[in-house]
Image (cartoon, rainbow, N blue to C red; front, side, top):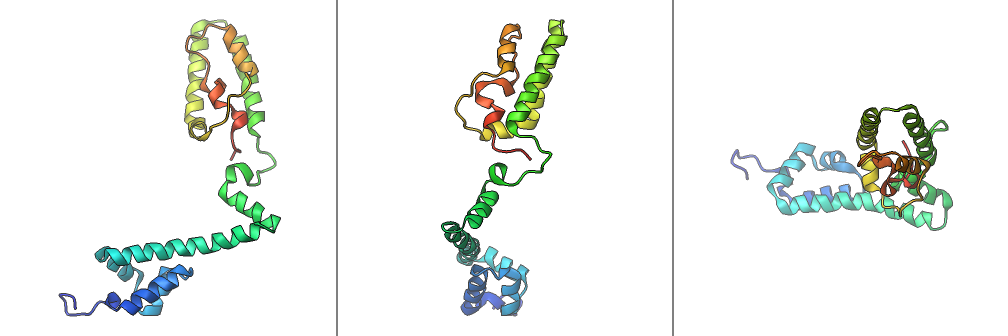
Amino acid sequence: MNPTGRPRVLADLEKRRTVCAMISVGAGIEAAGRHVGCSTSTIRREAQRDEAFARQLQEAETAAELMPLRMVRQAAESQWRAAAWLLERICPERFARRPADSVAPDELKGLLDKAATVLVDECDDEAQRERIMGRLRQLQEDHFGQRRARQQAAPQPQSDLERLLERFPFGSGAPEFCSHNTSFAGERGWP
């Protein structure tokens, strides 16, 4: 009994087992609580009080996630649609359908190469070129930094932009999107 005199609903081990069993098959914490006659906050509070019960709940939640995943993986072995669905969900940046008007990474890289070529060709002032290249580096870092961090592709052939930048004295100069380590062509999809 707790200090207020009212017995805790989940002091009953059978109710705890029922809650965990229901959650493990995907019923959810709300349905499990309704079934044993308590609220979700009661279940969560009991898990905070009892570390063993918290672990059991975590295992039940994990089992609920793994069972459907196992079934989809099994289906994917013999059914191409299940395999395609799984790939779309696991690696959406590579395999999810893209809108028709989206730009592929290699197309974007080509466009950026051409835009940088135009900028450098049209700019005679070295200080202005430095500012432009600095802004391009910042733009790349702001918008593509996360993608670059995930990428682990082998070095790519030198792009037109990289060859162009070698002809101009930009100091540390070329924007990071031009370096061998950060080729857009190696990126995995575009939102």
